[in-house]
Image (cartoon, rainbow, N blue to C red; front, side):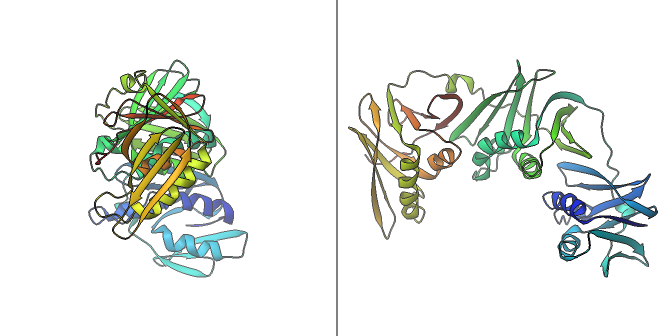
Length: 364
């Protein structure tokens, strides 16, 4: 095998595989990148137990062939090469890349990865889809729940809308956006797989196709094919929760002012042994008083607000609130009923992005 390829192109491709390929003592072959040169193009293949990625690229071929290699050190070296083109040659049991030699793996052990035929659901710009994922994936990123259901994202394609929802049993995030779809479809995707999709798509600016094939989500874009396994679990019925209109208390805040106060309180409560990141929220008059403490410090923060309804005092995980605020741009509205009922949080004039959070039991 002998070929050359543009440096920036190959860096971008191999970088995508660093999100997928991990050392696996049970299946060592899943830690390697398979590279095959034939028919005037180079094909990259990589997989773990949940996802598969195939990438195609143009190259200058002298000798067709294939090689199997761990990509991390290879990528690090290629980034340092000054030449615009990278030369690959498989020779005497090594992969020679410009002036360096790399050990290779046994390519006969690599599983056969093929593209599946699929049913297209919708098409979207990669950056736009990545932005949708960013607004919901924060919940799964910080979840310590090992239950697969509570580390997943529900995607609903219906009536030219896409809906995304995720829950960790203590809170739920919901997002709705216009998206022309070819078929109505509900799928449940593991959070880890969604994280890989996000990391790849956020650095692209391509049209992507969202599709399914039996128990897999298929995402394709220019010269690329990605697939991941879908979950067959039953996601909770969240619609009665997000449409609940029984809240009789509403508190509106300037986004930046509330976020600044939460940062200060978290700096103290994150060190609490008993109730990490938890503080008392006292909605009274035209101000919110947030009180937090740890074994070594106490803090009080006042935030101006517009209040509708009676006063309220309850416990909330500050980090939970801040994670939602970090994904908004407008004023924040918190709706509540009492100190033990679920809070509904939205940004001003946007009922298509809803966050539900359970309060924390505290002594009030």
